[in-house]
Length: 497
Length: 121
Image 1 (cartoon, rainbow over the protein chains, first blue to last red):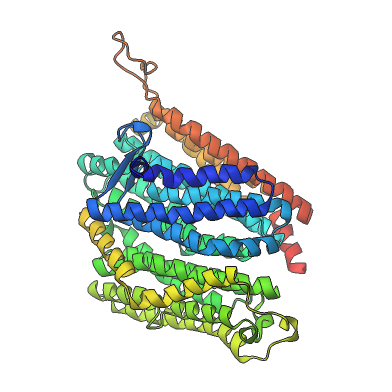
Image 2 (cartoon, each protein chain N blue to C red):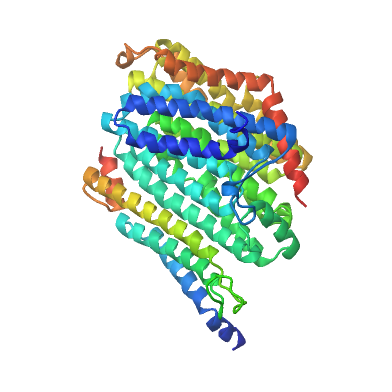
């Protein structure tokens, strides 16, 4: 244990990477699944150990290969990315048991081992983006996670999955290239790639609003916004989520966009925040306008969407709007709201997509009208769906309420009352699209097409119920989520000018 | 006139930006998936130039410490771009593999025709 302890940051990334390699050698889906399960369950242990270490003794700085930063690559864990690492790894661990049956049902036997290989590679990339303190290393991990994501989506059962994956490949690569252009400009300006070092040098050498710094900021922001599906750049997301295998959708919806949001927060507050007042730039207003547009337009599209998975995908775009709204508010309460919504939305969206996956496993149809009366056939699954759905709406007693509460306080502190009304009004839209499914599922007579459907086996039901209960639990006891988010927000805002 | 000379002295950046815009334009304007990928590759390649160019210092030598030289070129951009080239190749390969699968499933690689075929189903 003593020997392993100092190397936890490297192990966090290396274990899933080796796991992916081994899974690639396996021929049988079940063995690859067992490997993925072991790796997924190991990840939160490492992440929690590191977060505990950060909270008790401060930032961890790990020098990869023994090279001192800023020359070598540094893995740097502070409260913010410790928190993101825990989220990503816990979501992966909780939903992993669901994968075995769902993947066996949706994916042809020869491709199952590849599916787990790609999942582990994606996990490597996501954890890598979160843990690294090097801007270029983050790009490499971004591409590792993206390339494996394209494959995960393309493994979907429908041929439209291929087109969705291709579109995401084009958009995702443009996003990553924009990011790398921004990093290139920063490298030209500062001569360093280490984020912490970059922040120091930017503040020393380029105080004020130098056009070159603004250009770098713009490229990074636009590139990362493509990845996190900020409203007008979200075009890849609905189809990708709708046609990917059910389990992959749940995993990606809960983690991939959240890690991209982390990267945006890291750049806005930690890298640029020390030298320029990001809040004084038009960026802040643009981000706010786009967030509000996402909350309304994407929610409205979701209300009229017939395919349940696509509906939830549009809802993701809207919910990401709440998170970016918190970033745009950039005050203590607002940022806390945004950060806590990263966790809350990850948990409830994973629950919703798993519930949809469970319905697909038992009954196959995905259009809303086919789901008539499914609540009576699969009561536990639909109960979990209902709870997580109320979380999306932001009903008091669910975690969604906590996020919106902080966001509303943040908006009031900035003196923007219309925003509070916007948050409430968009919640009503969420009530409409969630309510539409609930009405069909619970109040209508079961159609004969789903006559033999029943709740899925325990391995699928348990992750679903855990996530649904977490939605309620984090709506009541907010010490872990909001408390942690508040600490992180304070640290972030303390670092900016 | 002064700006013209200034621009001419930085002609390498003009080439880079031209390639960048040309690549991005092809990605947006073309419906053929293979052409889109070609555009994407040009776009990515222009970024390699953006990194490599400033690494070269006129009169600088290879970065091997020697008392005879005092000006060295920066080797780091080359290393970074080696990584980026690998990423670019992987993206292009995956993109082309997807296009092959799409062609098998739809019988076409034109985006409009694919939309048309999905609407029929």
